[in-house]
Image (cartoon, rainbow, N blue to C red; front, side, top):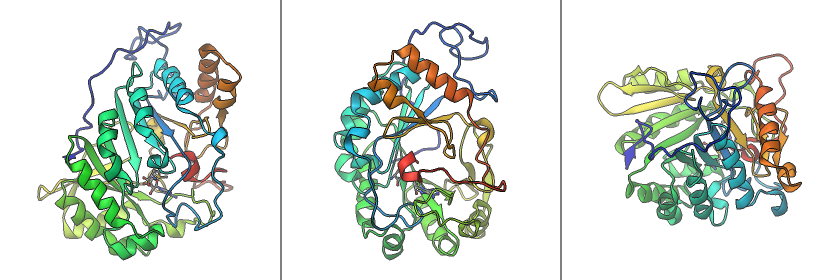
Length: 359
Ligand code: SAM
């Protein structure tokens, strides 16, 4: 398995020739297209595509145990619709695509869709966030289709604790998924949501698990994106708290933050690799956010925490031209909010949970 520390990329393809009215001299696509830029000067390069809202786990901080209303099939974008939107967005400067969900592997025939996204001119890298449960079955096809990097979510390396957190007793399946990736030359990172009262007791073992496999593990602060709306700041175990616990066992040093990165990465002094912290609650990284999200039902979101969505599905199905879609996308991006405002009085979480937005 290749520890993903370099952000390896597949060969760069030529960007599509889109006529540009007002290109800037500094943007890499200045000769072809005006950057997709928000009102704060941030340029969009990364697209998160949720390919389904369905998930096969019921993580306590994400989904309820039962009673979930999944999207009706006809409300979900099909492959042609998804690829068309990726083409339009690639024409506007999007270069990296992360496939997510729900659980992306719950979508049938996913490799066929990925192969088409990989063929879109301008797309340089495809990554996927998955819970890994179905990975052992699909890893070969996903890599062959063009996935360059995988983020596998694993909140505990202890089977009983994993089952308690996800409400499914499937840690062995996730481990088989990681073994399947090990046979490929792809980037792999692990994600763990940090929960107060729980992760303090898990984090050292989990880091040990990641170190043994030469993988970077990233701890994510739990955000108010649970379907039940139960989140409070008391649930948050901060990145700094986890880092201090790890540091006691394996001292770490901070690395310089990569531009637009969600994670602060630290290197183990003993040469045992790296560990990352996605401190979305306590240390916002909105300042250089370069992301856009497309939900499984074709809504464009400029922020995980937005209350507004742009209905590209209806526009697509009403026969909009690419130029009309471009106008809608540019208008949405121009209005992108600065940040998540989680700490402001009156903060209201988004109307959809993380699973329905796409993590
Ligand atoms: N099913 C896939 C998975 O588990 O990786 C992809 C989607 S999931 C929504 C993406 C990531 O979001 C996972 O790492 C998950 O643990 C994380 N996540 C879900 N709910 C969250 C929350 N309320 N706060 C922070 N992270 C959350």
